[in-house]
Length: 305
Image (cartoon, rainbow, N blue to C red; front, side):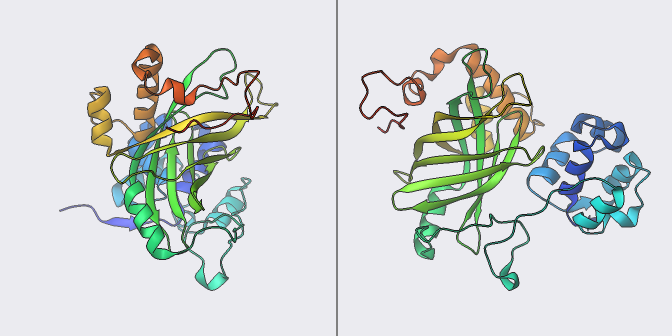
């Protein structure tokens, strides 16, 4: 007989809060996995996909990793949990929607009149974009050498408010946010969800075809280099290529382990492509950030086909 599944409100946010604060000397998901009996992919699912469902035995293992936390406190809303634990928490952003229509996940507290809201258009666009995309751009955080960042972008769903929800994994950090459309462009706004210390913006063209679409654009984020006290706004050309499923990524890059988390997959592919960037000969010209001195206009511009 299978163990029952329970739902623990805001489970992923609570786990992230505890890890960020190193509560009970547990600072990493690997350590939590060892102490709780959960595996890293399960912890990643709770934190990144905001899945609140957990096997009762797994939940008991989580509780045993944090014996100082009363079991009933796990079932309280996140804000109460954080307050009772004496840990600082972040405030969820105000929603752009009326309170009676608030979704279960936070939305950005701003909206744009120019954003396309036609439901039929959005549903067609989502059908083209749904699933996994692989992204490539030169790192804006590694200041000692040229290094290509590989990330996996998961286009999850079109929500009731006309935003497309998405998750991005780059091997080190995870980002959660939305994309929307204005005229012929696609805009992504994504927040780093573990440390809560960065928001990135990506502007691209709109999907150019229904089969194997490609997005070219500009990624704007922060670079700190070796100093965490310095955060410098930076930009890089980015290419996004639709690949559909994780199975195709494993096959394409010959990843052997079936138990790899999405974050670990992105990390391994990143190492593979940087070991020999000549294998990206079709991509490198599209993410090259060089701006010739005589260029007109004298700006960093996405290179379209």
